Amino acid sequence: MKHNVRTLFLAACCAPLLGGCGKDEAKTEINVFAAASMTETLNQIKAKYEEANKNIQVNLNLDSSGTLKTQIENGADCDLFISAAPKQMNGLQDLNLVNTESRVNLLENKVALATSQNNPKNVLSFDDMASRLAGEEGFILGMGNSDVPVGQYTQKILQYYSLNESELAAAGKISYGNNVKAVTTAVANEGVACGVIYQTDAFSANLHVVATATAAMCGQVIYPAALMANAKQAEEAGKFFEYLKGEEAMVIFESVGFSRIA
Amino acid sequence: MDLFPLWNSLRIAAISSVIIFFLGILLAYYISKLPRVAKGLLDVLLTLPLVLPPTVCGYFLVLAFGNKSPVGQFFYNIGFPFFMSWRGAILCSVVVAFPLMYRTVRGAFESFDEDLGNAGRTLGLSNTYIFWRIRMPFCKNGIIAGLVLAFARALGEYGATSMFVGYIQGKTATISTAVYNYWTIGANDKALMWVFINIAISIVVLMAVNLFEGKKGGTKRVH
Image (tube, rainbow over all chains, first blue to last red):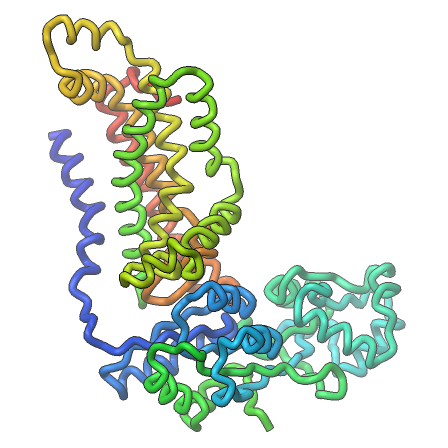
């Protein structure tokens, strides 16, 4: 009896291993490397695209842009790359890995001033944030540190308002996060009065966006995209790329807080 | 819902475990017979991945097997790449989980009473027979314990895997990389779901250990 239990147990453990067999491999596969912030949207777009193009399979590699760049440098098969900042795309371009003619600025993400849905400190705008940071006791801003891209944008905003970041930090008015997720968490749990994050992060964490920063305040957050020079499926990837630029895809991108390039 | 990470994690852990099983027993057996200095050196080398951060292992794997390295290029050209492929995750799991099997099995082998083997020899039994029919059954509990630990570690491998094979949905995504990816993009419900799946599997694995150990109460040898 005890043996039976054990056999049954083993069988139960092995069963899922068999489940994955029998996938059809006849489809043309295109490899898309994209910033992790596009996970949700690209999955929706992928589903729609594959539905309309039964012979295509879109493989999504979603990670931080720096990681993706390293993977491509190390020879990973990539047809289309969408970076969350021009820096990584430029780096690959310097290595002649990018099909430069295909490069476009696909999307813009906004730097947003976010609070929890309650907005307990009733933050009204970037101007309001700036004046209360300077004056009000116990008003704490959450921001990424200088290693984090969104932290660098926040520093520009503070400079725009002529605020001294290190003085504010010394006065305990800034709470730093190691990544944008940490800042988002602090805002959602009302550990800070408000935080500066990307609009897409605010949308996905269901936070209240008080305002978005203008280009004058901190520049633009551009997502460049391009086909790779050694793309194996350049033609099919090119078609998918065109689809991403089209209306149907843009509506999906906008639904999570991305903006079209004006 | 896409259950690919579950199946991928399980197949990676299962295949890694098979490789680790044979490799671990083989190396543990031969190394335990080596002179002290050689044994010590090989011990350090083979146990190193256990104490090194998995990111260091991942880095070495990218250097050695990335598509730009000679070895990586060879495998890429024959259409069997490891880098950014689920096969590469097996490589990561084997490297990182191997020491657990190796250490445990070596401990078990060292506690094996050589008189039993010698007694077999006086009866004219072959070394192969002695190994499989006397030594292995004697050390069974240690071997199973090592294998389960290695399987569990392989299943939970994150650091080297994320560096070496990335997170490609439907291709290289595993449970642990899925948790991280969903967490970074704020998809907390999905991350949490994978966390619970992970916990459930871990509980099943630990129950399996108890089930096997329960058979021979009190005689287990876990080092």
